[in-house]
Image 1: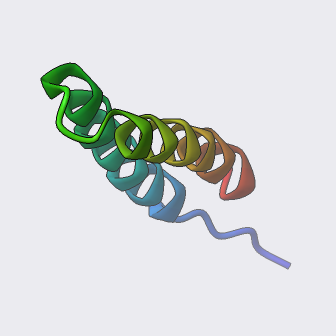
Image 2: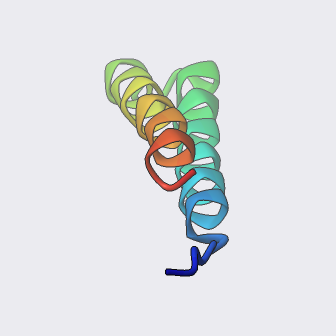
Length: 55
């Protein structure tokens, strides 16, 4: 059997990281602080999980 590797984990992790960054910017602007914080924390966790799940 041969093992194949993909870059799927990197792509998913980077997209989740970008969304987490947008959520953090929402906190800094003060427009929707609680929603921005929830988005930032949730997608930051998903970003780390994606790197581990697809490794």
